[in-house]
Image (tube, rainbow, N blue to C red; front, side, top):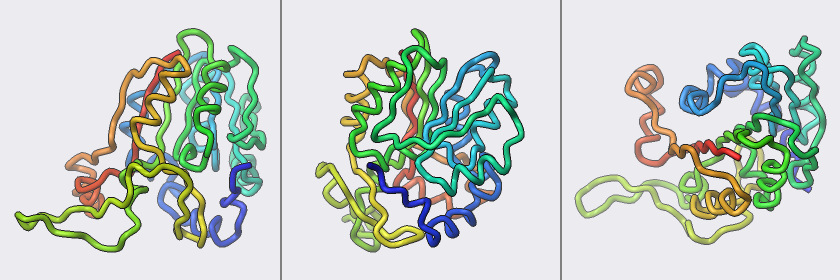
Length: 242
């Protein structure tokens, strides 16, 4: 069973104050790039894996999705989603992505934002999503970039030409990692980009697009802290087809 870190009060309080929690999709720097990977939502059946506060679920309906199912393991996140959603075509349910079970050919689009790095058996999840999509369906997701997850050593190092380099720690050593982010002992699962993409292919997905999030010049001008993304990306964005 996945760790329900979002139900810990200290983590939930910290997460609720992030820009993406307060401003929704507009507060997520990677959203414009991720949005460009999505199909036209009109008339589609959508499943939102790790729906959180329901921002994407509501966006999909605003863009014409026929119905949306938002799934999350956190009771606190689902409670907030339900409090802020007034649309009978959106349903929120508690579901652990480690044990996800969906009916075959039930959805046209599967979407997930920053949830997959909490899942240990991602190959099983990918297979379940593949089965749940109709032929021609799309699976679009973001996850924490493995280069961002790999560093555990503090600070920067400097190469022979005086350039800063990020101290990647054991990138090829995959598996469980524990970090302190918003709360102590947050469990995530590190996988290389190759492992993630190969798992998708082995399930039958075709890779449509892969992006290692890079902020635009305008985004950096508006939010100078995003300049560090040019040294090491935080997000991996993937679009696939069934």
